[in-house]
Image 1 (cartoon, rainbow, N blue to C red):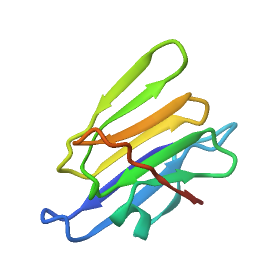
Image 2 (cartoon, rainbow, N blue to C red):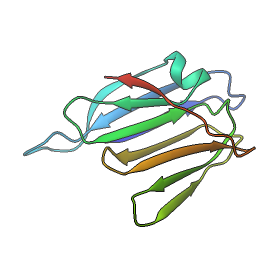
Image 3 (cartoon, rainbow, N blue to C red):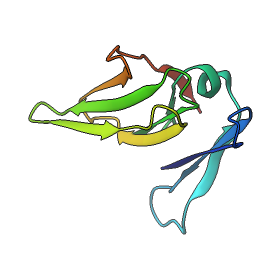
Image 4 (tube, one colour):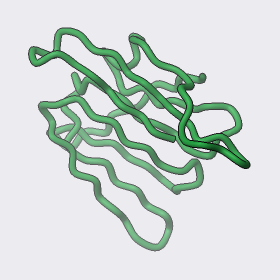
Length: 115
């Protein structure tokens, strides 16, 4: 899976795109979905695509997310995020416990969206 967010310099407008590499003999990535949804503008969209084992998290970052912690049961991996910019990250469905934090250390929930 590949996910991208495109936005204007003033953060007033955006669109996202998601591409997937189909199982079996495949020649690259294929467009699966995109556009503009309220979840990416106001929240963190957690996008699931039926038949794929990854989740894409896409946001214009109105919540000022600063980090993501992934706990696989053995260790905690931290992903730093610029709290003033939109973001995208992709994780496997079986990654373990995933927690998203804002700049004040508060937990931020994602909103699930299926394609």
